[in-house]
Image 1 (spheres, rainbow, N blue to C red):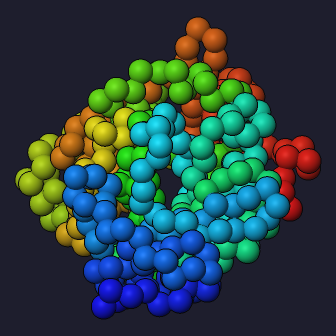
Image 2: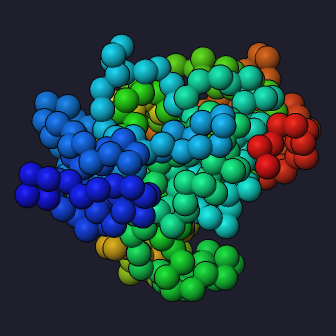
Length: 341
């Protein structure tokens, strides 16, 4: 930027700057319609050390407007307590709206929500769908990742350039989220049926809590995430480098974690690196499970239930969906008044 920032009058202008990867990109993201230069953060703050790891944040207000704000910054009271994270592509934005509405209403959650999305989704569209729920929208640039035609991608009918959408979930572990002590990631399309406090009150210190993908009989093992029948050499290479894959692993549809334990300066880069090294993996889940079960082993299985309620399931296998706090695949019609649009 040569000490100066271009005039940022639109979301597009900011995204172009970020995509360019210029060293001062983070410092030049200012308030909407302003070319004010922000102070360059120092590496005393672990959230601000990687100049190439930039996000654009827009606060979606109740009046439907959007305002660009700096992606990295400190708050007057230090780190906040809890953030709920939801991610969706443009095509799945209505699913995110459904999930966020259920978080606010049946989830009885009034705290911070961050909506992660790709940089092709404009602020006005996000505001139209989510503006009544007081969320913060965070756009990250799309990174094209390799795709092998493994069974998972064939079942999703993805083209060779379609895997990037799944890998965007890695951004839930971006250092931006170190502003909060705890983070709860929930897939777009999931429904919250009961107050989130049942999950948020669990002890997550030093841990990542998630639902075992092997539950309830635990016959599945992590090796299946790399499709060893079709790609035996790749699965063997993963095991040789990181250890046996004959272990439990988790579903990445809901993850509750201590941000200080889960997020390091290279976490996102490492996850993307695994995709390029071993592209036969199952969506985002193979790499998140490998990272948090082998590379940084802080995963623990979340309790299936407490004395008060069932907590989470992919599909309702232990009772009606409404008896759970969260169910991934139990799309439930919400009250129309809960939705923004």
